[in-house]
Length: 194
Image (tube, rainbow, N blue to C red; front, top):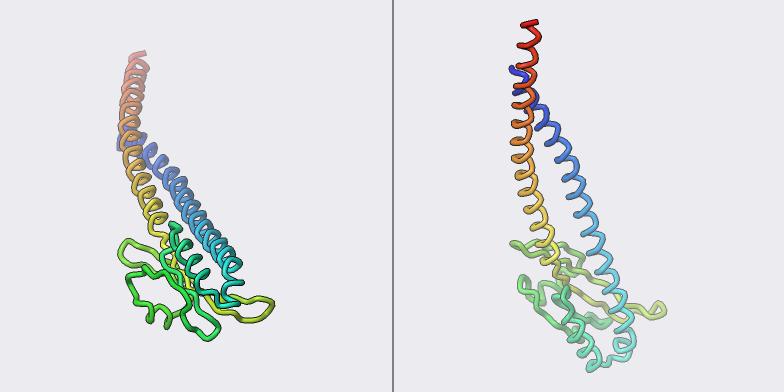
């Protein structure tokens, strides 16, 4: 195996190794931060909504609950919201979740991460209490598809940049290796003549 070929191979392999480590850490960090951001956003939305509907839920003020649900449903990440009283009766809802009907969703009523095609939903069910008195519960469906699509695009762009970088580095390694071996060959020929 020629020196030129070994030089180019080692150079490219070393660079690919470091690129994989860097990009792997980047993907891992982005994925973890995205999950943390989603969880934090969901937790904040739940806390805010819980405080917002305690009083109307405790006095069964349906008009106020309807206004809250309608306006809360306008949030970008909230797909569906259902408010139930302490007897599990629907008081108010804004339902846009197309993969289950409302009865199926209420029957499941547990925290679910739902992947359907390229869409991702997180379903959260939480109970509302006021001074240890059970008032009812809320079922929320969060649509995080746009965030996941952004991460997917970022991965595709990163993979494209990796391939492009490997091609450029291979070309540079070939040029450097070729010039280096040409000069080393000339040097060794001159040394043999001496």
